[in-house]
Length: 266
Image (cartoon, rainbow, N blue to C red; front, side, top):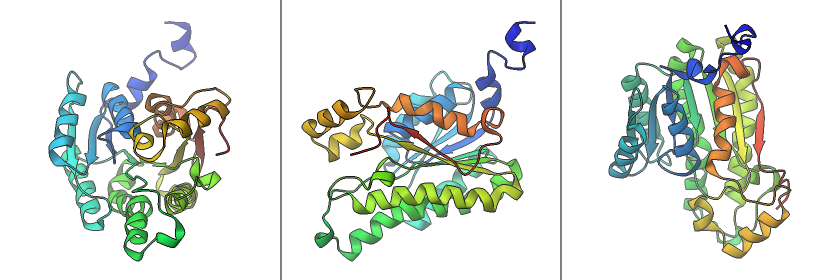
């Protein structure tokens, strides 16, 4: 027996934690969600990924699941639509045979819009996609998570703390909602053995910022970060695995882990 095994920390701890676990990562056909879903799959979990475009999601699922023990399931649905959100979660639970981990990662900025230009339609779409979807998904997954005494991990953002930059007010507020929702549900769901936490990424170099930030803005941001670089999707993965692990984080609930290289300002 090795020293690690004697201490109760086996070398393949993460594989032991997640092998056969049933995991749904919403908004996972690209970016942080894709990196998180791929890690779960590589560790032996049975994973469902989600995105809006069915053909694209199925292609990503096939590539992501190639060579893994259980493969990856691809599910499509627009999470700005509550009915489609419910349907995706129900399909995941059905096809996986239950659910152990729900990662509420679906969402995007939908564009930088100044307060004076926000109309009712944009306001509602932002709320539905970036805030309400986590509530609807969690509610839909609740019976399965009660049965498994599972875990929920929400995706917040540093903009939920700082308020973000011009034109991102609704997105930033929705990301603050994710952290607050985790704290509230942690108390409510604790009697069922369900832990609820959040990950708050900083400025992560994914296609999100290719769409919504200029190269000059990103360079200035990187220069202000203590670690002197933007984050990557892979930089975020460990926090999700940690919070999903009962062995590593079994006494952690209602918390938000900041993954930002020391960045606490715009």
